[in-house]
Image (cartoon, rainbow over all chains, first blue to last red; front, side, top):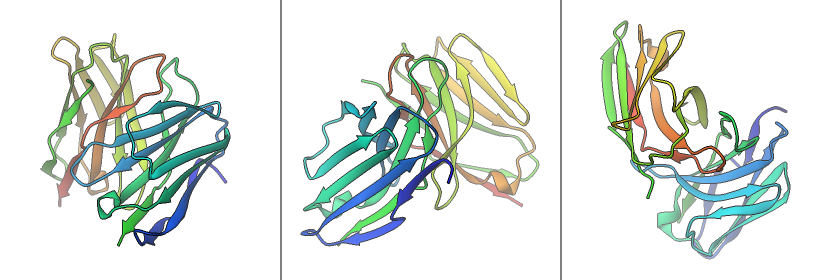
Length: 114
Length: 111
């Protein structure tokens, strides 16, 4: 296993369901991110965790709830979503804030809310 | 607030050069990145440039930075069909975890 792995790759859920997205990184990084990618819009930064502590929370609705149990794993818990929440959800990780450090991305979870 | 803008589409013929442009607003940006996204995949880093540089060349890729105008460009020489993807510009200030991305430019390479 290398890089950043997201599961599931595809998810269809009803508006009353509860589901979770999972992200795992095997790069030894200390920061993990959730981004939302919608068509023709910039990637939206949702949450950032550094050393398991949330450091960014960009006015995301409470129906999205992140969890970072350790520096290798990140979850996004979903409940009572709306159809406009349908998007590609990307997880990323990076090592440190100094230097040129790049963010490494997973392949994303394509979420459809029906 | 921070903002990164790109045009949505670019078409070029195979073998020609492509130039993808990006503007950003945050004057404290330290690092500027170009990422590529192929269908069904996440983002992969193509190259990056530090804000005290004007140019960086990396094989077929040339990045130009005009810090005064907050303008970044990516030139791909001898564009191939395998370069067809969405290219994202991103900026980050050193000491922060916040990568700010543009909308992405969909590059279509015509054979």
